[in-house]
Length: 608
Image: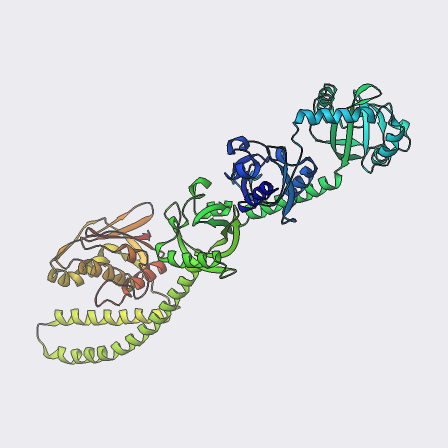
């Protein structure tokens, strides 16, 4: 008695048993304490089926628990130890998808079992148990007077057959098959009631039973008298009937369970389809690794296959500036400090593209451990819209500033122009200089008018046919002095003849002034500016190439935005105005730049 108490105390001291089962119920892993609790070594259990160690009276309960785990939290059943004693365990189960490339997911199961009570059983072998069953069954059916009365009252359908021919059926069996009289079953073949697809396996089972060998439980479809089908769970064993070897069949109607399983399976399939076909990314994070992700997530990160993400660190994709915020949000969810977290972050795709996302985090479990389920949505378009709105606001401010600046400059220009007109008659042999000054003052007035266009974009330009070579020649003549002061040589030798375009002369002059002036200013230590133009496939292409310091990559992504400049005294409006004018002329501009090697502007106009 004292030894049993010690054994019981030892049993409960380390009574948690953990196992991982495959989708068909075989042990993939079991904790080492199985030696203490079940008297089996680990190697003896790995690869074996769980049902082989479950008490026969509890097998149906365990199977039902696996099917209906979402409705039942805990299942109590008996496990058989190596010495054929039984222990009661309290079990919980968690399902895990292990192959996410297939819509019909294979599922592994994590089974946690706590031993709650032990039960002594006789130390007889399976063979002796089988012999005892046969020994007890022999007299049971030699005299059916008393036995039939008991069997007929059983609520479970039961029948006896010899080589498949039915020789006995109780009342529950008749009711199950929709038969009114016994002679409608007695003497007939069991195959008359069994669906044809199961005939071969039934013949094989009958052959084993006739040899006195045990057979397991099987599910079959039987046909009732009215022709309807019912799902049957058949438990068979060998027996003797009137001194002949016979088959004892115990039937259980599982039609309701099968219907429930079908409904449950459809529900699972709908749930899987819902996840897989969701336009949002649905994923699970455990230990900062992706352990599940639907098809939308694979597309979002532009991965070639699931293997590129599953099992990998999540921070490989998250931008470094957002990693700390993501860690804090995940930690709050894992520690149950928050039921949900919403965080925005930028991520890198496998094609080196930056995307902006919004992530919702909620707690879940993975292999029985705390994990985080996330819903990830791509908000890149929303961010682009916000940036466009901000750029639009900047353009509005630029237009308002331009209008004010233009009005302020026009007043002193009027005075300068008036006094020059008064001085001109008194100056002899200087008319050519006055002509140049008046020409430039007129151009300044036109430029001021163009600034006003930022505030009044509805004004239309004065379009006419222009000689591109002449237009650029006038601009280079104006900027030649500034270029010489900076030690810059302007080369305009690569020009084709008769390059005619349709546009506003003053606006296009402003375009080339801005671009050439920027090229000159990018070479404070001197250099060369090459200006060339050619016609190609109904397009006229002008290139302006410098040997300056180049444009930084961060600026290249935002080039053309108002107030964006790399110059110490720059306003950041020149390129914005240039882009705006070219757009109004149905032209395009492309910029190629390399640090410390220079920049090339490619301006394309439709040919006249």
